[in-house]
Every structure is written in structure tokens, then in C-alpha cells.
Image 1: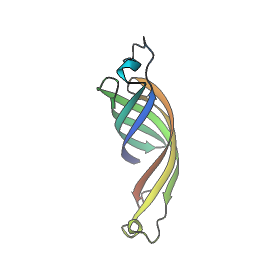
Image 2 (image 1 turned 90 degrees about the horizontal axis):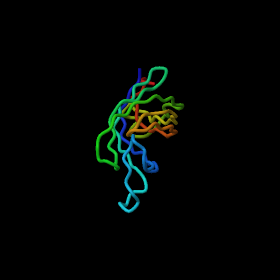
Image 3 (image 1 turned 60 degrees about the horizontal axis):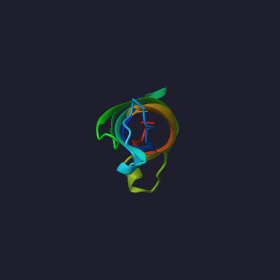
Amino acid sequence: MLAHAAVGQSWRPQPQQGDATRPFLSEAQGRDHERLTYLVFEPWYGVGGTLGLALSSQDNKLHGVVGAWEGYGGPQSLMGTPLQKAGLDLAISVAAGFRWLGGAWELYVTPKLGVVTKGSE
């Protein structure tokens, strides 16, 4: 099993007035979109999972994050670089998935970049 922690942000249009699952703030209040900042743990074994917390700009409260994803890519050799000399490789991938984030479901595609120890791929 591989696992990593991730910090990120997601932007989306603000909820429609009358949406009971997410708060609505008028454009007069200066918000035409919602920004979610999240911290998640993402283990992978055949398929990836997501579990963590997100802070919403709409209500400044913490919300749970849960989801599933799959990625494509892998370690890239860094021959001759300080990372390679330290026994590390660069991991580059593209992931697609779905998650419950800040009170609503999202479908997403995102690049992922990280560092892995040699032999952990």
C-alpha cells in the first residue's frame, strides 16, 4: 500500500439560494465563488481513498472530506540531481476521482507531484 498526505484548494461557484446543504452568501457580500482549503490522507491499494478535513470560505467551518480516486503515472528518474543522490525519485501522475467536499459532491481531474524513496514504487 502507498499513502500520502495532501494539502490543496478547490474553487467552485457559490451555492444557489435555497440550497439547504450549503450556505448562500449574496454577491453584495462579496462572494461569487466558494474556496475550500483541505488537508487529506490518501492511501492507495488498487484504488485510492481520500479522508480528511476542509475549511469553507462560505461559512468558515470545517467539513469532512471523503472520496475515491485512481491515478496514472509513476516515478521519474532524477539522475545527477541532489534528490537522486539522496535516494529519491520524482513521482508525477494525473488522478481522477470523486469526493464529498464541504457539503457537496465533486468530480475532479488533477495533476499530482511528489517525491518517493527509490524502491517504494
